[in-house]
Length: 126
Image (tube, rainbow, N blue to C red; front, side, top):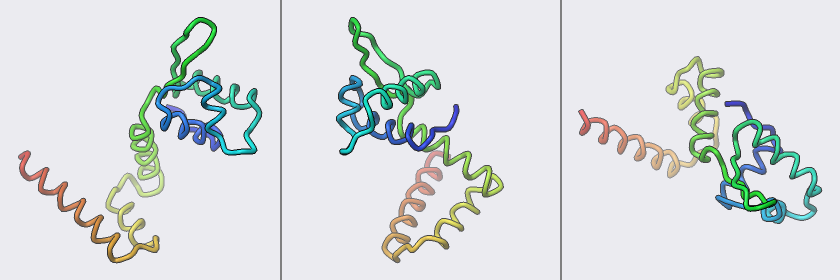
């Protein structure tokens, strides 16, 4: 699947939050000053063509909804990032992430707990 531009990603964030929406509702999600209605309409149409958004017609009005979840999009893009910048190594990514972010001891412990939980799940599924 193709990548999103900044404008497309912003629109998708609103639509993921709304789940289903008419164009007017998407426009109203933007903070003021809002982009022009026609600009947002163009971005929606591009996202439909790219396959990120689907719609259901109700007469002349379309109700839009995401074609993939936010989680699916994040997983796809994180995979691309890890592959391209970290030699397809999640270990290198995790090392970079923990060493180059201003993380508190508490945040590091929370991440460790998440990893420990995943290790337990995988051990029990063997």
